[in-house]
Length: 150
Image (tube, rainbow, N blue to C red):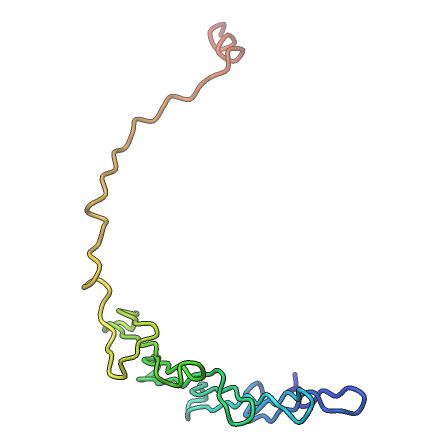
């Protein structure tokens, strides 16, 4: 399967794209008319993971994010565009690689996600559930009469 590099209508380019490899775009440009374009730029780390995406009209960034990894785990996603790069999502992991904590859209550039258990105590011990005795299944009267006759 190939990469879609161009879409035209009536001889005018609507979409243009450049690719690093199959399925890994470098840029995608959408022509809006009147000389305006939406340009999506992509960047990848040495392992081939997407680590940067931005969406611009002219010189203004409207959306995107920059991702940071520690080993194979995503630890930070800096939000671009409306937040002006000042907000981030931050993750932390336990020794087995499971998500231990997450902070969404923090303004603190040095924020460290902590375990959610430290903030919210488990509720499992506080639940009081009593098992009720299972009701005997009801037998219809016609079935009950047949059972008595036998």
